[in-house]
Length: 270
Length: 292
Image 1 (tube, one colour):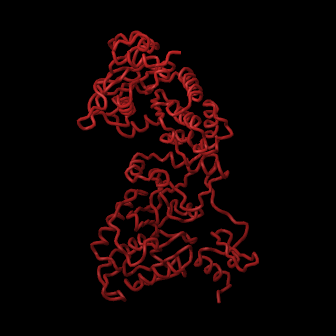
Image 2: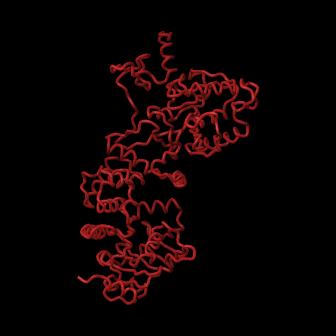
Image 3: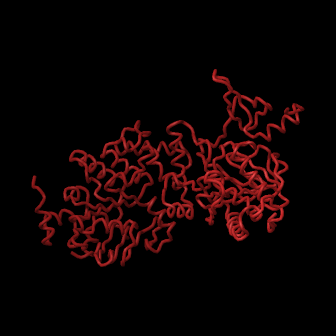
């Protein structure tokens, strides 16, 4: 299936994509991280990236989120003023500001994305303070509001994240990212390491947030169940390359590539 | 002031004027000039071993040594007092290596080297105050990597600093940082004012005297030029406040100075006295209550 076809059937069609990735390659010396990845992401769309461990999913995500510099290829992002900006041609201050305000990054391990030594409220409020919020009451109100949205009891606002359960930490990390009203969120195995019932609640929450806020998201996961629930479109990666892409149901129900067929058939049938 | 080229006045022979060799002084002066040109920016310099342990003011001493001249009058204070070990040692050090006049009176001094306090007496534009700095980097508590903190300074990414203040208010209802309270210099660089009480922070703002900061172990010099804005960080709804006391100084009766609590016996007896001994003594002289 070509990219053009994908654009036509994209669930939320707008005149211009939010993210336009062309020929993205990341080499670690001679070894391939990811190779020649191209896709476009529209506002409000959730793209799932699936594949086994070592298939280059996380490398791809880190390049997209400007956390790793790609060896070749371009990433263009549509800024709020409509301009398509080359992420790696932006000045560093602008890029850092972008990643802190318009983007979010949810780590697999919430400990990587949280400040464990400061309270939940401060964790959520940090982005606001980073862009100049200087009113304690307002910051606290926003933090309370977001804790409520991610279903953390608001009276725990002054507790340290290390006293939270794994699921709560993950939800706190999501609140910390979404407080700045980003338009694009990158998630690396957001449900990894959580038990099934907590996973289900988190998926429910994510689905609601993505729908209500019109977020675009790139979600990396090895769990096809998560991908089916959250993603509108899927990219299947293997050995650093995208072997198949298309609408989620299409890819999972009618896989074309042998590897995808293998993956899809490995899901336990209910 | 910078004419310290001969060793003739030194009372201890065998050393150059003010201990440091002239090349070292030039190197430090260059760092100072750069620091003055970029207020609040930490300039790296090749800090030397000094005949004092780190933590005793090796940074301040190197700065003082490179700006002091034979016509200068030096005052050294430690915790506001002129007669504490650290102050006495440093004053004696410069007395022996330069032979310049030393004083305990703030108004007579041309250079004041200080640790933990800014004199209560208002400084003038012909004076220089040298601070001893243990840790120059205000962002260190949240970011251990030097490369990253430098980048944060370069890009003015100071938002996370407010996380610390937020955390104080959330836990204790107010900002509990009482000393070394972070400040913005000239609206650009975040700076640690050295461990002075936040009571002294307002004195840094628009101060007529040149303020130099030396960190010997961390090898950094920074400066606040005369009449430069220095603002303490705060929230709009939790503005910056300084300490206040219910009592006046038990010796001079001042209600405007920073007071130390002194325990006088083991039965709960205590008194509050000015931490600035010179200020306290001057006030007693003025009121005719001459110290014995």
